[in-house]
Image 1 (tube, rainbow, N blue to C red):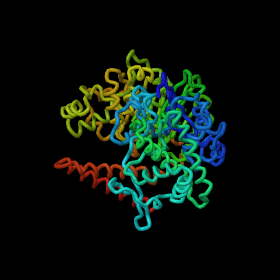
Image 2: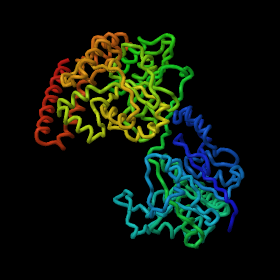
Image 3: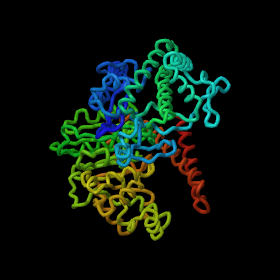
Image 4: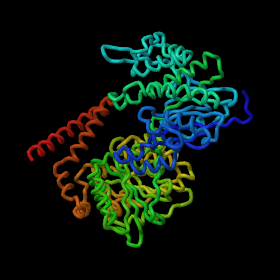
Length: 626
């Protein structure tokens, strides 16, 4: 069998929006599209997700189809559609089937039956799944996933457990799940397809399996396989009463199809037909890459990003309110809030802040429903990837309050090659000075973080001006997500950004990020004290410490009184909820630190832990009395 230029089409089965695998030999297909409108009515599918499916995938509900049977057949409705509507795919020489999160590594070397687990489909993986040069199309009749050790099910005290020993093949076929369907299939095949029934029994008793209903068939092989395959499945569907099956067990037809497909591949291997096994991949996170699109008024407007969570929501509200109070009526402002585990009530509260403000657009984006490169924990690290369609973005921590128009910061000129502007992180520098002294502090930064001049270069992650286009030109946007620090470490954001944007950082005047007072201020380098003192008098953005009431300036309370949920703020702060959560988090961190500390450091940890516990008991006692 030879072909001059064999054509290949691989259908990628989707039942919901996910990262798109399309182009080249791949064609996305929506399985079960006939039930999409009903899913929208029941709230199982959002309208925007429906629109995405319509725009990006074929439907399995055209021509002759069984789309309405998707709850039982799963991805096999795409196989049926391809069989009955082959000409709509331009009658390719080879037809393949994969899943939205699982497929073939066409250009990778075989891996002894292992599955390559990957976090995302990055550029390298996309090359491996798209390069067909190693397939040798025309030489093989079928491409199958690499055979894996068979994981059979055995009865164990009324339950089924996995048996992983390949030297003990499963000999009792009727004890696997959905035994009715398999028994009916074997009986039917014994009378209608006796030769294939023998191969199926042999396959079920074997040590290896071809899984997931995935394969790439030559056209002649597929048209030989599909009639018998769907004839058996249709017979089993007719004779087996599945009305009492659970929702998951309704898919017994798809599971049976997996056995039939594997047995067919095994049959071709034993007949010594031309079969090639391919390594497979499994994507752990298939959420679509998030890219915010500018709103209609975004051209030329001031773009501000902040974040909000369960604890920081009320602080975020005060920050947004202070921003609105200092806006320029001639400019438009787009505020994007990256929300993590934020309740619906708080989302409505935050949206209400911009309801009657003509020149402010407020958007809330749930970070739990989006995927970024590397899944960075810190919102600041999400900005370059999330705002890739924008030119500039100002990121502001929710633990700040505005005293000037943020447009002045947004319009700050940056030199060619610079992609980031931020203030010096005097808080971290002061704390490190207190703990280790100036000389040791500098040495530690040079050794651990490769920052040669921390007293000049260390930047704060609280207020950032990002030139997105410059970051893209320098390739920083691709590296920034993969280099995200651990969650909750704002100093780490500054350190990582300093490393990634080395030589491209512009230092802002301290007025744009002033912490008016903190306990380690006395340890600030003398050369910075004078600049910091002047910045306090003319602060444009005031920063305060999370969960600490004392740094909340009178101006913060003045702004807080103007928000609609001021009573909630006053009540929560007076109850001590914020302090309790912060103290418990610090205690948790200290418990971990004690495991890796010794000597004087361990003693300091124990003393700090005892202080926090005393503070915790005091707040809990006050709350109990109330």
